[in-house]
Image (spheres, rainbow, N blue to C red):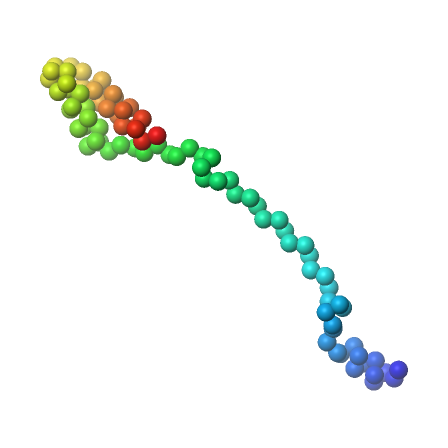
Length: 83
């Protein structure tokens, strides 16, 4: 084979068998399903808490002095419903 023939052979496109093999694909990371995480607790609005606390006050016969307890009870009740 002459030098010219060798040069032409080297310039020829490589066949499929002569190409470098590809790297194996990197395994994909598996994602954790959302259902495994607890849902964030919804924060009730002040208006919702106030309405329920007022209802508790009415149920107690409009007795004053327990507004803080009514408020906390209403807040806990609404947070419990959301979760």
